[in-house]
Image 1 (tube, helix red, strand yellow):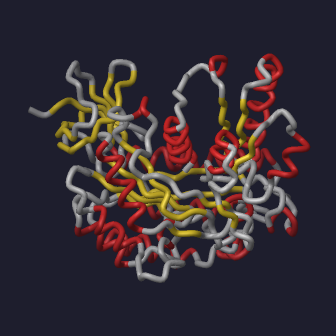
Image 2 (cartoon, one colour):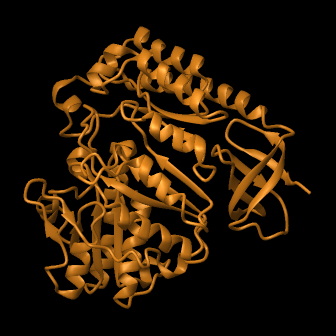
Image 3 (cartoon, helix red, strand yellow):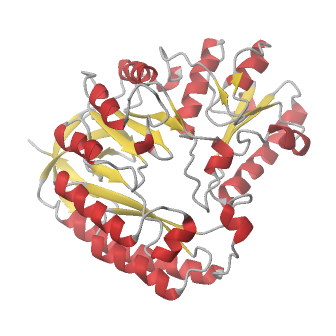
Length: 427
């Protein structure tokens, strides 16, 4: 989400006459776009801000813009007192305050009085900064901002505001612009992407949006994330199964395998519900890959409850498991009402146990690719090897002197590991 927001802001700045520089020392404007999903991310952002302070002291004309979830939808005033050397504070996904500061035009953004969330009408004719045009193979499009589900551990609703779906024609315009700049693959983004359109009155939903995107001729691949088990409908799954452009890869977090922990997290489903969903996904989409998210060490999680998560992961054999250790985020329900009572060493132990299990599972799944031929969309060259992904989002490396950027090529898998595979061009 932040990568997409930064690209749009970069493009907006270019329309004002600015140019990108990779060197902070050469910049007239520095934008720090922040994430605070975990405490470590927020700590890192504060550290980076402090490292910029000497540049500001040396060059008072330097403009520093703090953007994203650290600011949130209503946190600017508090931060101004704490960070007096920062010139502009921008909520997530909103370049309006910086553009207004640079142009002295306070009418460039509108304020939603109920949520404090700011919206900016973006020009979708050019949504990539110049230095990325013609080079970016895969891009992201936010389609749902904010979240209204409010899991007890999650800071996102407090920082990104309530759920707001973008109009479909705006999304389609952005997709066409990206494709015109050479993008071959688009990933639709939302905190709960499968809730897209539920706040719109025209009947638009994720399935209908996927069908419309499928009509863009030069677009090769479409993905979407992250889904919530309660809203991943058969209509969405059938779109994935029906249209070859929509990749057979689903990201649907479980977060925990124990029903009591799931209730305490306010997830809204049970272990059995999730298992049933995984089976339905596999029934509708043959050869699908599935990724999940898991939090270990949630308040009150016992060893037996943790083992419920272990057993679910062991039995469901999912392709990817994004693992995290619980850390309380200030202002969330779990931080206010629950004691962070699982010791740090126990959290790490559980993390490592799941990590080892998932490594074995992923290695077994990927081993089935050995000797097979698969289409790979190549994105960039890394250390003399081209890097790309299969339709099921498996990372593949090929060593060749050919220019593979943006090409979808048939390859033969020669080696597989848990996290990536190697291949040779098939001829």
